[in-house]
Image (tube, rainbow, N blue to C red; front, side):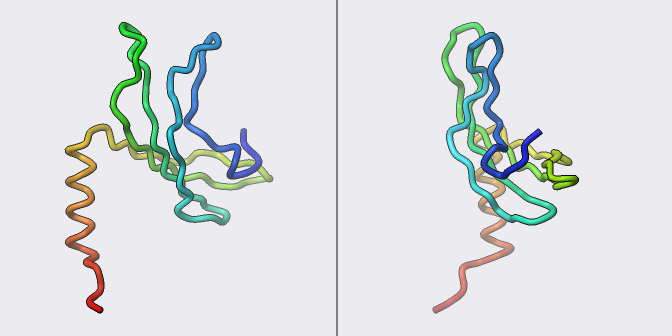
Amino acid sequence: MAETIDELTVHYEEDGRILRKEVAKEVLSKGSWTTIMFLYQDIDRKTGDYGPQKVSIRRYQKREGKYLQRSKFEISSVAQAQAIRQKLGHWFPEPAD
C-alpha cells in the first residue's frame, strides 16, 4: 500500500514484463480523500504491442497513513472520452470574458 500520492500508480508488471504502462498522472484533489486521473496503456499479450490509451479515475482514502483505493472509473475508448468531454463542456461552459 502506498504512503504518499507519488507512490500511487496504475503501472503493473508481472514476471518483469510491463503489462500496464502508466503514461501520465494528474492529481485532481488531495486530502483524506484523493482523486487521481491516470492515462495508461495495456499490453496486447498476443502481439506484445501496447494498445490504445485509456483513462482511469480513482478515488483513494487515506487511513492510518496509507492510501486505500475505494473506487475507480475506466474510460476505455476515444468515443467514450469525447462523449464525456462534450457533456462536461455543455454542463460547465467556459465563462464569457
